[in-house]
Length: 126
Image (cartoon, rainbow, N blue to C red; front, side, top):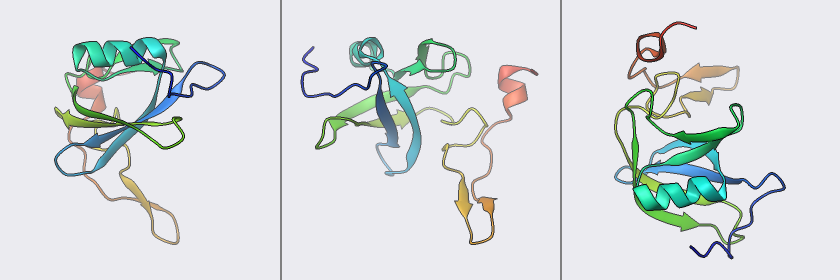
């Protein structure tokens, strides 16, 4: 795979935005390594690099809320990726469809989107 146009950061990562292919809703932002990008392209399922766990992470491997790749785009500078995906279930680990579920209303952050699932049910209690 030719990644020559891509600019990975000093940690070998590049930001990846997942957007609903049908509605255009921005679902989430995560990071990808070269290997997670290869795996994503090979399997058609979004695979990210988990900075907190230090390993590859297939979106939905625990929850069943997968992201199926429909299109892959790169920005003008080559330092960010955009994936248009079919979201199966919710994108956010908090149970919301999108990770962007809070909006600034001038006084504080307000939740604007209802939960699609409860994390303690899907992931168990921590």
